[in-house]
Image (cartoon, rainbow over all chains, first blue to last red; front, side):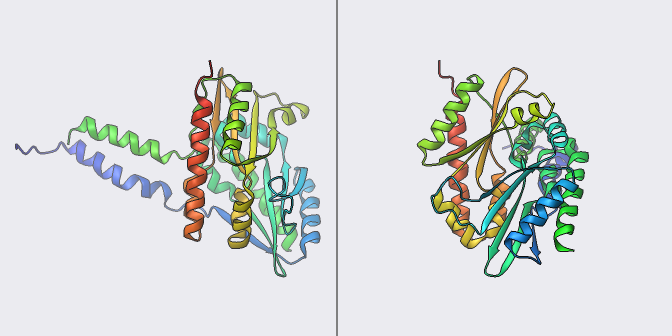
Length: 153
Length: 147
């Protein structure tokens, strides 16, 4: 069998292939954000709803996480759906694959006496679908931060 | 290795990195919606809600092509996630997005690789693998032309 030296461009491509996945995922922001609320379940949800309006979101609906799949959905796990129509429109126009993030939502969970707000990090979603959502995800991140601040402050 | 072969490998790696990849349906929008729901219920999932984002946006003065999100799930999965990993409930209910773009109908699932990275135990990893397999099979079936 004859051994052939590989072209330098070939080596560069091999190195790029080996390094690229790590480079793509390195420094990714956390996917999930969880923040403990100082309030009980009902007060936490009430404060979030108030804060949504002041951050230009329209509250859409509240439901138990398992509502619709079982008759006995645990009321200690609630989802709040909300939307800023202008941002949603821009997001879909920029990137159709953003559907898994829509509509915007926060999950409020009570385990024992602890109430925690969970959500998918918009920064993480931006990295997942591409840079075309840069400005939009930044705005959503700021809004989410404001909402959480209003709950915990 | 030939440079051309390596370039193909590079493209495959690049494609693999694109976790969220829409699948073009061979059917029109209404048939795709019906077919994907039938496939999901056939695999034991209950359809919870269909969010018509296009209609909601239209009411607010923003016109887009048809864009629907189908929410669904299985009760036992919800119970397990709520008990073991409350933060993971942000991915529930599961969803498939069906939308029109440039004359075609597309279906797109969720970021399962990211979800797997967040799993806390083997049962969750298996659960996510099952979701991925079921949903991808359902999407591929629904994409097959009916006529």
